[in-house]
Length: 598
Image (cartoon, rainbow, N blue to C red; front, side, top):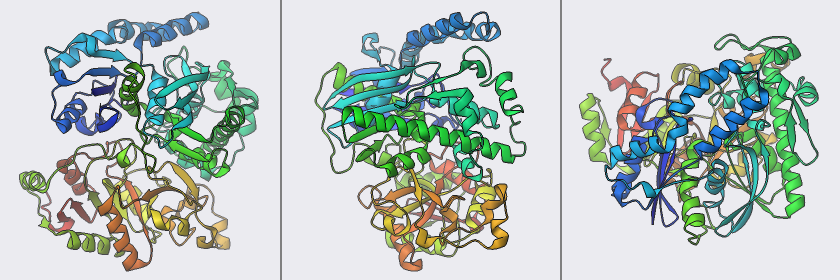
C-alpha cells in the first residue's frame, strides 16, 4: 500500500512516500526550489518521491495532509474572541488570508494535486491531526515496541505539548497542554526578542546560550511561566503578543527586561547572551520535570520525541544524561517536515490498521538518507554543462585524497549518496574540516558559511570511537544530542584567556579538538556507522590513520540564508562562491584552483 504524506502552507513543506509502512523517500521542498523554509505546496518534493518509486500520483492509495485546517481556523476564531477587543488589527490582517486560502485548504490541495494528476480521486485525500503526525513520525520508525511519545512545538491545531502511548501499531493520546500555553512559542518569543527570525533562528539562540549566564531565569519563572512539579506549565499572556498581535512580545515584556527587541543584524550584547542562557535553562527545566513525572506515572522505559522543541539538542543531551529514560529516540526531521512522514505512517497503521514491523537493531529511518542521489554519468554531464573542471577517481584514491586534504587543514565539500531528510547534514551533503585546528571554526563560519562567528560546529565521529572523545557511550546518528567533551581532552585556559568575555571567547581553544568544542566544553555529536554511511565512515577512518583522530568537523553544505544543496549544480555553485578548497561529488574531485573564475 503506497501512501504519500504532505506538509505545507506554514513553513518547511515536505513530502514523504511509504510502502506498506516502509519509508521509500522523503524530502523538503526548499531543497528543490532553493527558498529556505519554503511554505508552499511541495510539488517538486512530491515529484521526486514518485520518481524514486517509479509511480504516478494516480497509483498512490492515499495522500494525507499533516494537519486539520478547520481546527486551526477554529483556534484562530476562539483566540480572537477570548482576547477581544485586543488584536483587531491582527484579526483584520489574518481573516482575508484565512478566508481566501487556509479555510479552503482541502480545495487548494485537490487543485494542486490535480495539476500533477488531472484524474486524481478526491476520496484518496485524508487529513491527520498535527500532533498525531509528529507522534507517528517519532514512534513508528523507532526501535521500540512500546514507548511514551512526547511532542512539543509551537502549536498544532490546539495542542502545544502532547503525551501519547505507542504500543505495537497503536498510538493512544494520554494528556495535552493547549494553546496559548506553549514552550515552543515561549522560546520563539526570546528568539524574536534577541533579534533572530522566528521558526528559523531558534538554533542560533541555543548556540548563543553558553556565552551568557542565567541571570534572567528567575525573572522568567516569576513573571512569564508557572512551572508545576510535573512539568506542566502556564504562561502569563499579558507579556505576549502572538495571540492577537503581529509580534511575539509586547511593551509589558519590554518593561520587564528594560529594553526592546534587538534589531536584526545589530551587535549582539551581553544581555542577549544572558537572555539566551536564561530561556535555555528554563526550557531544560520544563523538559526534565515533565520527563521525570511521565516516567514515574507510566513506568515505561522508552521515550520517543518529535516537534520543533525536540530539535533543542542541548536539552536532549541533558535529558539523555539524566537517565530518566533508559532509551530515547528522536525523529531527525522533528519539525513540520517530519509531519509529512508521520501523517503517511499514521494513515497506514491507524486508519488502515496495518501491522507494524520494528527495526530493533537500528531504526526505520535508514540514516535519514531518503532524498535524491545522482550516478556518475549524470554528475559528469551536469558538471560538463557548467564548465567545471574535475578528475574522476576510484574509491580508494577518492578516500585517500579527501582524507589527506582534511589532514592538511583544507575545507572540503562532500556530496555523496542520497540527500538527508531533516535539518541536519549527516555526511551526504556536508562541508568538512579538521577538528584539530583552532582556526577551522572561524574560517568556516566567516569565509565559507558567511554566518555569525559564535555558531558552533558539530563533530562526525566514528561510532566505535565516540567514548574516546565525548561523555557518550551510546548512539547519536542524527546529531540530536549535545554532550560534554571528555575532561581528559580539555585544554587549560591561560590567565589572559580566562579574562576574555562575550563572543570573543569563541577564539579560545578549549580542547585538543577545538573546532568542535563549544565555549562550555560541549559538542553536538553525530556518530557515523559503517552500515548506514559506508563511504563517510571510510573517510573518517582514513583521516584517523593519517592524524590519530577518528572524527571530522561536519556542517551543512550551504551558505547562510540558503537551503542545503540538493543537486550537483547546487554543490558546484556553493563551492565556487566560497573559499572551500576542494569538492568531492561521488567519484569526482574538483580543485578550486582548476576552476574558471567566471
